[in-house]
Length: 284
Picture 1 (cartoon, rainbow, N blue to C red):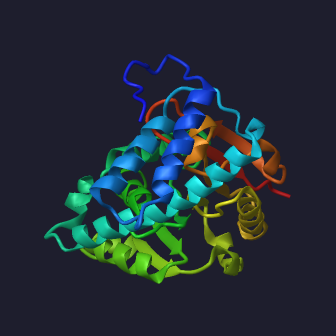
Picture 2 (picture 1 turned 60 degrees about the horizontal axis):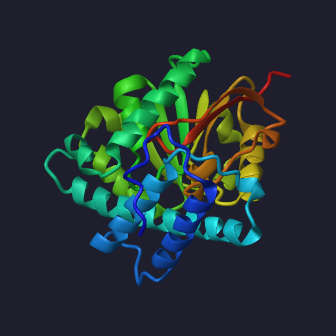
Picture 3 (picture 1 turned 135 degrees about the vertical axis):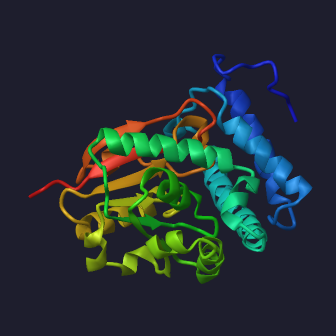
């Protein structure tokens, strides 16, 4: 595996060099017998995350179809691996005496803190303060964004977390159950977001996790459904990706957002992976 130690964050990595690395990593990850956390799995995915954050000018739309297919496959593999990693850590942490004090054991905890700080700043800059009710769609077994937001940024907000997987929700509930005050403000419910309708109108702000809607078509369909039922003037925060980071997560394009008022699109250049897209449902 080639090394990028000589590159710094100001140096653009040639696209073809990065793409060759992505192809190689995809080949290695595809051969794994299991995506459960292990030394080999962790090493490959750590390398992939580092690769994604290197400065490059990769244009996803311009990639050959073969590379686009590999990118989609990588996103799917990453999604599955991430779910297994979260479930393992969530189960382990929930068995410790004070689970909320041990969230820092999760390998990417620091990234979630940075992302939550960024999202909170963007929400405040766009007038979203003192939200009464927030929904998080795709909260998973390790609902770090909701927990960090609830403890550090939205101290009186009620959070409804929705995930399609009951096992993920069970694991998440156990972590939050260790704190009575937080448990009162935080619910976990098993739903496919496409089955939620009028209820979506209750929320001042809805977060859409990066891996809800793995393809662009699916993501656009989900956003359209949320827009239809969310309240007028309510905001939808969507996580996206840009450039090489799009080998980890799906992209939301600006031309997919025509029915929304676009408040902000922010692309990080540090070790935060996700872009933040903040949208508002216009008042009629």
